Length: 245
Image (cartoon, rainbow, N blue to C red; front, side, top):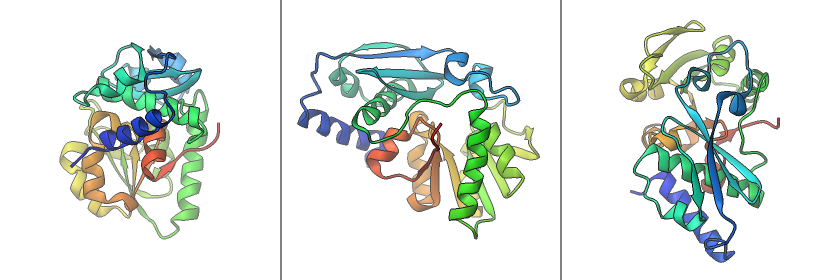
C-alpha cells in the first residue's frame, strides 16, 4: 500500500506535469529556520523547536513559502523534478517534499497559509481549537492528542479527558499540565481505542507515523493540526484544523 506522502506526491506531480512546471526554470530553495525565525517568542511554553529537538524546513517556490517540522533537516536548491524524484526513505527527504507540497499548495491557492504562527499566536490557536471541537463535536469527552504541543495540552486538559502521546524519550513519562506523556510507539492502539476523537500533529506525515495512525484510527476519527500537513491534507482530503493568523 502506498504511503500518504507518496499518494500526495503523485497528485502534485500530475498537476505539475499538466501545468508544465515540473521542469520549470524557477528553482525551489529550501532552508532551515532558526527557532526565532520559525516561532518567535511564545514565552510560557517549551515547544520542541525552542529546545532544539526539531527545526522547520522552509521551501520557497516563486515567493510562496511552505514549512515542515522535522528532526532531520538540511537545505536544498534545485528543480521540482529533483525534489519529487527522491524516494521517501528518511525524514529529511519527506520534510523537503512536504514543505514543497505546502509551498505549491499556497501557490495554487489550496491553502490559506502554510507557515508556522509565531509569538502569542500558538496559545490563541489552542483556544480556538478547543472552541472548534466543542462546537463541532459536542458529544466528545475523551480526546487523544498525538504529539507534544504544550499550548494544546494546556487548553484541552482544562475541558476534556486526555491521553497525550509522544515519541520524544525526554517527554515520555513526564507530567505536563496534569497529563502523563505516554509512549506513542507503545500506546497508540489503546489510546486511540479509548478516545472519541484523535487530534494529531501534522508532523506525523514527516516522521512516517501517519500511515499507522490512520490505519488504527480511521480517517474520520482523526483531525490533524499544524502547518506541516496543510498541503497534504488539502490534496488528499484529510481533516485538518487551522485558523487565520
